[in-house]
Length: 227
Image 1 (spheres, rainbow, N blue to C red):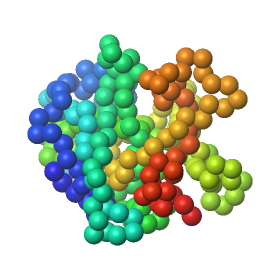
Image 2 (cartoon, rainbow, N blue to C red):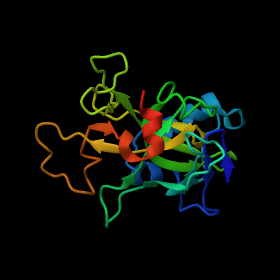
Image 3 (tube, rainbow, N blue to C red):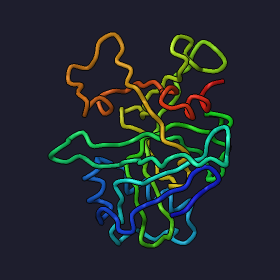
Image 4 (tube, helix red, strand yellow):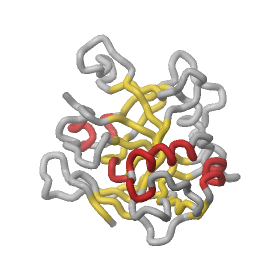
C-alpha cells in the first residue's frame, strides 16, 4: 500500500504474472513496450538509467484505489478496482479501465477538474525488479475541441474524447509512475451515425475511437467535471 495527496493504492503482495518485456508486449498487444520502458527509465529513474531490463517484469492485473470526498476531505470513499487484464480465450478483447492522470505525482484533483490532467486507458500495471516503484503503461486520449472555451459539449455537458494516434494509426502510449493516476474515469463509446457492426458488451471499448467522459457516473465525478 502507498498513497499520494489524492489517492491511495493497494496491490496484492504477489504479482499476477511474471514475463519478459517481449512476452508482455505480445500478451498485451503493446509493440512499443520495450521502447517505452527504455525511454522512461532513461529519462526518469536514475537507479536504472542505461541498464536494459533482463529480468522478468512483475505484472499485476488490478489495483485498488481509494479517494476522499469532493466536499469533505475527512470522508474516505469506498475503494474501487482498476483492471488491466490482457486478452484471453474467454475474452479476446481484454479488460482495460480508464483513468485520470497528471504529469506528476502531486495534483489538485478533483478541485479543478481536468485542468492540468488528462484521460488515459490503463493497459498494464508492472514493476521492474530493479526499482521499488510501480509503473503503468497507458494509451492516451485527447479532448475533441468544441465551439466554446470550456471544450465541454453544449448538448451532453460532457467532454468528448478521441484516441490519440500517430500518423500511421498506432495508438500513442507511454510508461508513467502508477502514482500519477488520480482517479478512475468512466467512458461511454460515441457510436456516431452508425454503430460498428461487431460491437458487443466485450468489444465496445476496443472497437470504438471516440468516447464521452461520463461525468454522471458518480456524484463525486459530477462535481469534479462540472464547471
